Length: 189
Image (cartoon, rainbow, N blue to C red):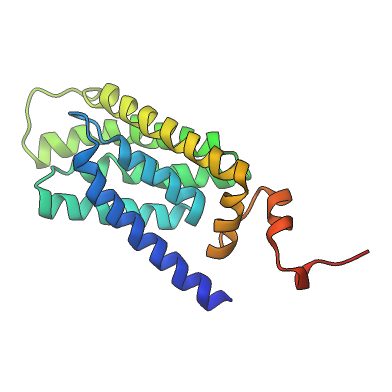
């Protein structure tokens, strides 16, 4: 079972990276990439913070090398990805905390750290420390709302717990998890 879960986690990660690379230029608003935040939150909830960080990094690197996107592809994704997963786990499975982690990580931390990257490494002039904050927060809110609605729908149908169980991830919705476990694992009274 553990070997199967590891394979499924790797496949899910590969699918999320592919999805992130493909939909980011299609569903994009100038200066924002809301679907990247959707992918970060989804990956955080389904796979955890480290997989989410890896996913955001891979998407960012691929977008930079093959699409000519500036380093904002990394600074605008990795901090939100890790904080989304950390906040989700720290809150013991509250979906809104995954969204808040993404907003803080990308909308504030990533936006502020984008200034020195874009100014000193990329050579862009006329920026201030807060230059990217409004667009990054707007993008994370759009992507976060989409992710929240999607994950709530999955939770209501019981699919969220089922997917998390099959991936070997932490399941916080115990009522759903108990209903989805194989009968052999349940104890009868």
